[in-house]
Amino acid sequence: METANQQMYDAALRHQTYVLRYAAGIRNKINELLDQTEDEIAGKLLNKYGDSSRVVTSSDWERLTRLQKVIKEIRSDAWSSAGTLLSEEALSFVEQESKFYTLLITSISPVIIDTVVPSPETLKSIVTSRPYEGKLLKDWVKDYADKDITRINKIIGTGLTTGTDTKEIARQVFGTVKAKGTDGITRLTRDSVNMMVRTAIQHINGNARREVGLMNAEIIELEEYVAMLDGRTTMQCKGLDGQTFKPGEGPYPPIHIGCRSARVMYINQDIGVRPAKPVTERLLVKEYAEKNDLGSIKKRDDLPYGTKGDYDEWARKRIRELVGPVPAKLNYNDWLKTQSADFQLDTLGKTRAELFSKGNLTLDRFIDVDGTTLTLKEIAQRDAAAFERAGLDVSKFLN
Image (cartoon, rainbow, N blue to C red):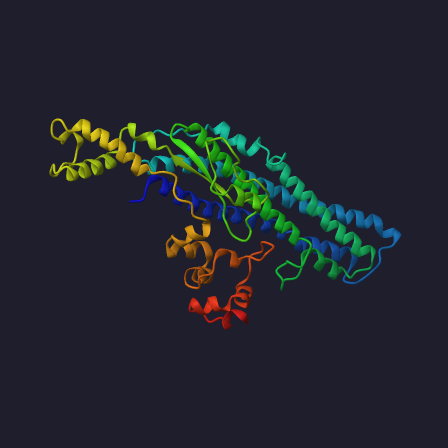
């Protein structure tokens, strides 16, 4: 029978997968806001300087300055909307996270416990008043916005003053449709948004867990640092993976920009002194009665005279077993192998899930040495045999 703490471990890692996906969804929304400015900015550029190469003369400097000011306004409006979106999502997320962890504790516990939810003021402060690496959420947005606008205006200014064709300037800024914008300078912005949002969501998630653990320290005995071990895992997280700390002590993710690690809370095994849940008590009474040949008994009150004290002592020990110790350590790759095919499919996507489960590819084989997620074509070029083991036609992925 799976212990409560094993259920906690599984639920926390599953939830971490969804948290990272949630962050990716916010990232996509922010990138959409920024992408919507591209046609307008390119149009302003072409309208001011035409569809040709032309070295900017001294009389054009004022016009260039005005253009860059307009571009700053356009992009700043998009970044303002992005900041509002991120702030609203963060405030909603921190509340949901605190509820999730308190409900998780009560749902898996075999005994009746009353968890404490952090106050609304505390949860709001996580978003609005707790800095990460010296900066609040709003300051991170402003910093990335300033760098993005500076890069765009620098490319445009340099291109115009050197006589670069305006279409080429636009391509240098926004990239090509064929490459999905990855060959333009704004790819740096998209990468930055990804890191910013993931780090922000992790910062909120980690602080929400920390507050729940502190508020329920009598119930939560230890917390384990769990790293998402694959080709992108930093040495910092690898070094902390598997270490345990008391609530409120030790590092909480994120410990670096883009960190994907989590801390898993574990229930104290000594909670057996508390009243068992009705469903737990029914199971315990049934087990005790069968163990001692007492017949079919469903309630403690129905136990024979003189056995209740013995039952209570046995039940406390049995509840310790039901709670269980800190689970044996699995890395993320091995843990994912223990999950259902549906969860693997949901996490990895159809082809990668088949390569993982049938082709025996480990998660690090989906990642390049620099941490970039490989395309299916790149994976096929490197691990063609895995496609064959998974029953996939590798030629379909190489074309």
